[in-house]
Length: 444
Image 1 (cartoon, rainbow, N blue to C red):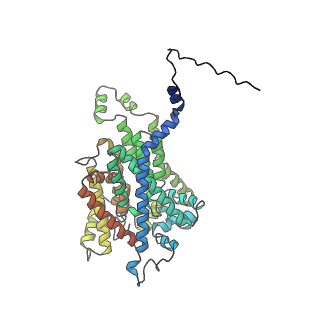
Image 2 (cartoon, helix red, strand yellow):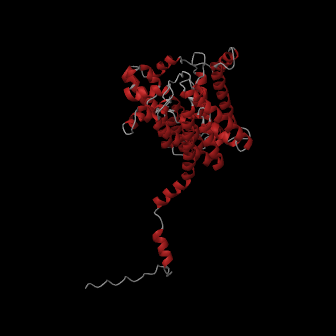
Image 3 (cartoon, rainbow, N blue to C red):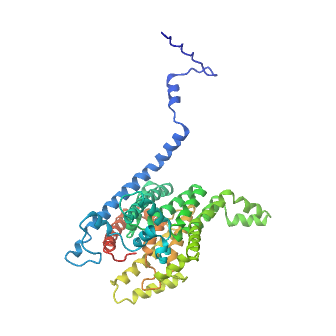
């Protein structure tokens, strides 16, 4: 019979302090640094995940219910969208309209099928194509799932960014205000909108945290989703220089003291080179267009199919839209309403961008990089209009990308009266717009 070896004698620590059973247990139970870091990260992100998911789930339910009743007004009448759906699949397919058709074509057949399709950037249809190989259903259903999941990511990132900027209460409002916006349903449609917003928010969040290579990588993916993604470069440069202590006065003083070169050199380190990744997605798409169609700017040529070409001063475009509205036979004519909605949205977003910098709801100078990106986003359709009877069409969809506007609205929403007015009006309009959309009528 084997004897149990004698227990090793306890060794007192060097300072002769006795070892208590509690302290040894606590030491053995202490989490490893990686585990502690993961726990702290989850503790920070958990409220954002919960709020984002609840907002997202509520939106999905609302869109399903509104879609289900969208045919009640056309009962007994011919509908542009076709016969009344009788199955779940037919109900869902009522979202397969407009840009979605192009994304499905690209995901299934590539850009060679119709050269006009190069107007639609590749990352979203590429993601749909990959998802379609893994998911049940067809390409359109894969597109809806990708869009919905990207929407969830965007809402979580929105909440996390605003929480760190303004606090949890404002973050909850900003997240809800974004999805409640009249065109917020595009964030769950088979469009690239939610993917772009999610990537842009990820990039902007990483800029705030000083994670420059991550910020540039997400911006590069955004520039492969929409051409506007390359404009994250302006926000990147501004925020990088701000965090490095750049100021005109400091450079002026350095020049006067003969140390301008050293001062400029001190502003840059290896992280500054990350900015080259920002246009990487656009550059890759340009290379594809050159190799496939012999023209690196083929995607700009394709825009002419939608009567969009050339630069026009924004104030001239605004004047043209005002003339179209005032010259309409009725303000209730669909074109007049579209022009009014898009012009009002553009001017309101520009006003909110200004209010993010000055006034009672300002976010502070350390958040100016968000305003820079939003201002460029909303000025792009105002300076590259559609040469037809609704020049700035879709502007109130592009407003979803101007996330700083919803942060200002969240601060304004601290007033309960404003909160109720915004929520009521936005949700009512969005419900009507969903019905218009699924009936195969143009919204944005």
